[in-house]
Amino acid sequence: MPAADLDSFDHAILALLQRDNLMPQRLIAEHINLSAPAVQRRIKRLQETGVIAANVAVLEPIKVGRTLTAVITVQLVNDRPDLSRGFRARIAEEAAVQQCFYVTGETDYILVVTATDMDDYQAICRRLFEGDENIRRYSTSIALERIKTGLQLPLSAP
Image 1 (cartoon, rainbow, N blue to C red):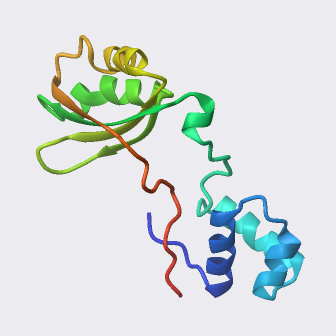
Image 2: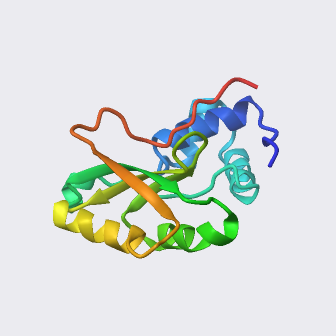
């Protein structure tokens, strides 16, 4: 998918929305020197074209009982689509998987998973990996401290 054609106003709107998606459009308009209706039209276009993929609340994991974060690397026996389809479906269905990347190198997938505790983590691993003959191995690193998390993208000037 090619990059969207964005101008400096779009970049300014997106930068503000990445910091606070609930910022009123009239305040956005004031910040970037556009009218509120113009901001509204631009936001609607950004949503319709998929530049804005979702409007979500970012939760603090510990405050909702997700005290453990694990980074899991997964190596498959064979990464053919027909053999990895079941694994990908389980990943997509598992709410504890925050992010999953299909990557190059020794590892085939990298997952970021949250759990309430080690028992919960082990149950998640059983659901994701147990009984799948195509999983060669998986390895887990437990996060000791969150230094930085987020999905904000750096925006370069057009």
